[in-house]
Length: 245
Image (cartoon, rainbow, N blue to C red):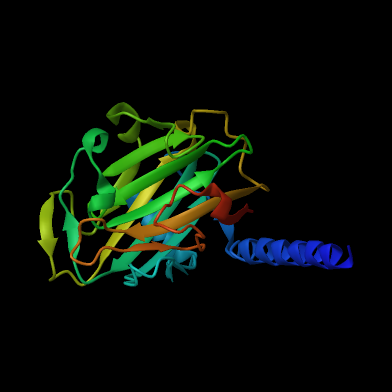
């Protein structure tokens, strides 16, 4: 009887340790600044200038979560917002750059050189994934799980303003590009599967990724660590934290 009791308590301790290890993955926290512009719909050039003028910090995407994919390109992002839009900027240095897709509605940007933003703006379980290749081609989806995704059409994605330092023309794999930069402006109204409350003063869950399924060196890198056995970014349980000022 005593032996059974001891084994029972040991099991509780082990489970508690596993829970603590899993919780330790939730390490990323960012305070997201609110920006003001003279125009209600600022141009991409205005957004880029503002990000630089306020010295908005960059955050690295450096976590290689799976041993079979150790390569970590040098990737940074920064994020800001106003009452109507989200502002994202990525800067990437990698050995190879690929951008073969150019149509939002039919493309798989994650097969190219790709940066991604996943977030859950409400507490209803619906999260969105926005995946951009190096020339800004976008896959935009929302839903409650990886299998239950709604893909937004070109009518919606065309409202996401973006500009890349590499232009908009697709190209095959290259090894002569020093770096690339992508700036994105996303109207909050596009997150339409459920109403998004004003962001100011709120805390929401999100993650940022860098990947490239069909590059010579495939990779799957995240900002906040992901604790799955295989590459999988559709894991809101491993999102980090965004605090909107």
